[in-house]
Image 1 (cartoon, helix red, strand yellow):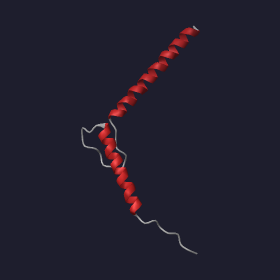
Image 2 (tube, helix red, strand yellow; image 1 turned 120 degrees about the vertical axis):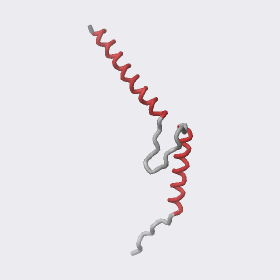
Image 3 (tube, helix red, strand yellow; image 1 turned 90 degrees about the horizontal axis):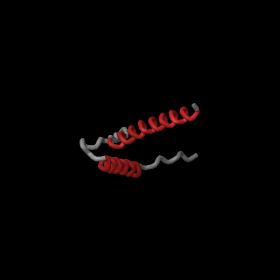
Image 4 (spheres, helix red, strand yellow; image 1 turned 180 degrees about the horizontal axis):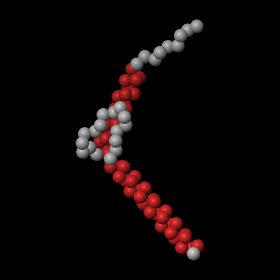
Length: 75
């Protein structure tokens, strides 16, 4: 009886892992860009989407670096 519960528990664990792995693999093919960023053209690969996001982040960081830092008030 104890062995039967062990086998059933193992099969249940494997089923849960299989479902989670399938969801994760499905998520890799449909990457949504973060909020605030333009979306990639339809049919773009994950690599193209990644490159677009990287370019947008780089441009955003460079724009922030160009802004003057507020100076603290002297007392």
